[in-house]
Image 1 (cartoon, rainbow, N blue to C red):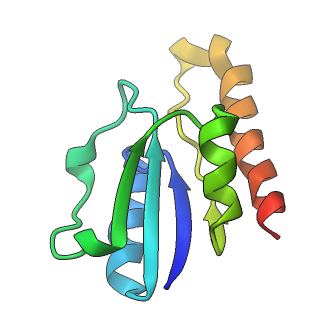
Image 2 (cartoon, rainbow, N blue to C red):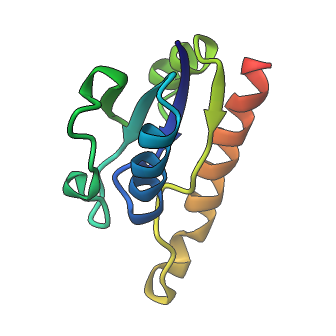
Length: 111
């Protein structure tokens, strides 16, 4: 069974991606890595009946000790932006960009 890593999978976009992907592609195992910030909600996930193909890991994509071993054993890596960008949080934009870049960097490790 192929595996993919979805970062930010408890956010709006990530959860909808997982809900779609887990039902459409039954030969994939999904690992959902999410820091669970204020904009995350695990209740957005509709994985009932698919639990054997899903794992949630509470963690930060900036934690290389956590992410690198995951990335190296995956068949695919689907990076998704893990934070919502609002005008009031524009001061943290660098942090959001860094996190997304790190995630894309891990996808090159898997190749």
